[in-house]
Image 1 (spheres, helix red, strand yellow):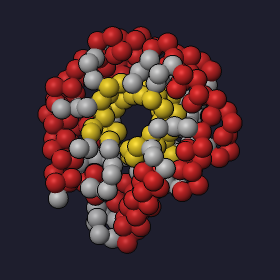
Image 2 (image 1 turned 30 degrees about the horizontal axis):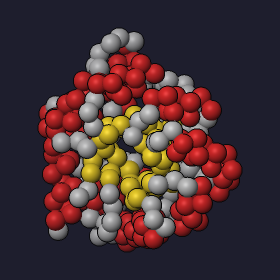
Image 3 (image 1 turned 90 degrees about the horizontal axis):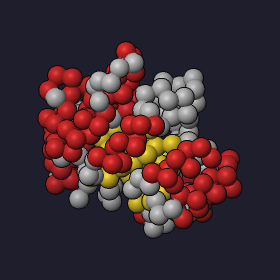
Image 4 (image 1 turned 180 degrees about the vertical axis):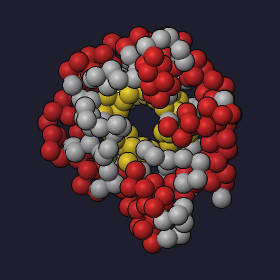
Length: 249
């Protein structure tokens, strides 16, 4: 059964705009859980632009569903993860200039360094994941460094979907979806778990959720945006219904 991980970074973005204590990401996590989320994702960035260290500590202590910590593969972040012990640590590329993560991690270019980070996290009992583009060479590199989960970057698919007027049957959209499907098949053949995420929303999510063998989708901005109008609990519940409906089909 497909699972939904809710990224609550942008709740912290609103808070940091005024440097106050509200809205509280932990409260958002609880509401997401009540709406049916299977996990909570946060990205502790090196520049601490939204999620702060105390947020991750409180989430670890106060939430009762899976915590996925997105992080750069730096010594600082690996040490934080090994101390906090989230259920999953996902290595992602990170740039100070970007608004949000703009592409997948290039494992091939830094295989030894990433392999070391994965080994340290695994030794601490943490499930390791990487966020990669839908490229078979990157899937093979992920298997070589020993991760258990690959999350495929769905941004190119989402951008094609939007630019083609939300036509799920247009050739560019189907081509991007096929890349994700092929990467997912390679991930599963290598004995890893197939997850996906980035720029998924209420309109484009179902074709991805219906892909064979997909285990978990991580969705943040779309859910937090809808929560402004209907509340976090309902926004999560609506997304969860779409995922389950897609898999039943």
